[in-house]
Image (tube, rainbow, N blue to C red; front, side):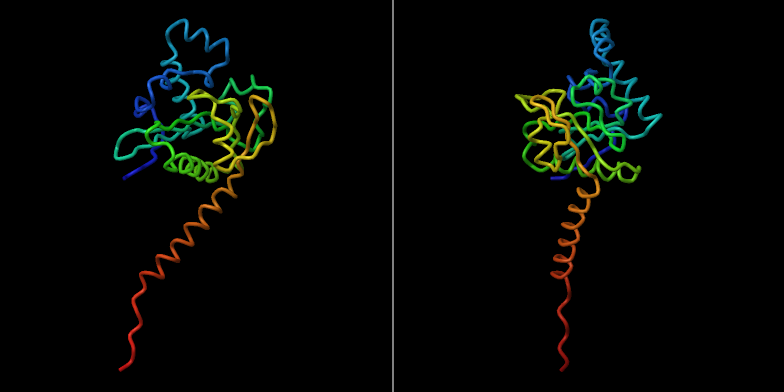
Length: 205
């Protein structure tokens, strides 16, 4: 199974699920979001938002492909680009963190570790750009795919609760600890595989 994570751009925006391509829950404040829906322009607003973030800040998402089929995505940006974040009782996101906005994996591909791979890929990207952490608003009462991520899933991939709330806790993932764990595992595997590949020493005659 070949899998790859590709930066989100306007060119591959169409590979997101249909409902996500035109969802502006996070990208606009509640009033502007309602106005866009009534005007029938949420898809255009989504494109405009992604274009602006790419130009001003840089990469803000990844699309996951398995055997060239798009099966998921993740979206993230500094909270200044996420107007809806200020509407939550556990806001604001810490100044040293980027907000993990939302993510999705097609049901048939869940449970295969893609969620953890996505988080680790985002962590590497953000560490290179000088950020210390990712934060997200979780949904403690999650019942199905929505704009908020289930708090239990965030905890499962390494996030810790920094602002408790019965419905929308704010969670945080320290980037260095995430990558050091991954790199420790990779180093151990490299050593193991390297040892297995060593040629046997020749005995002197």
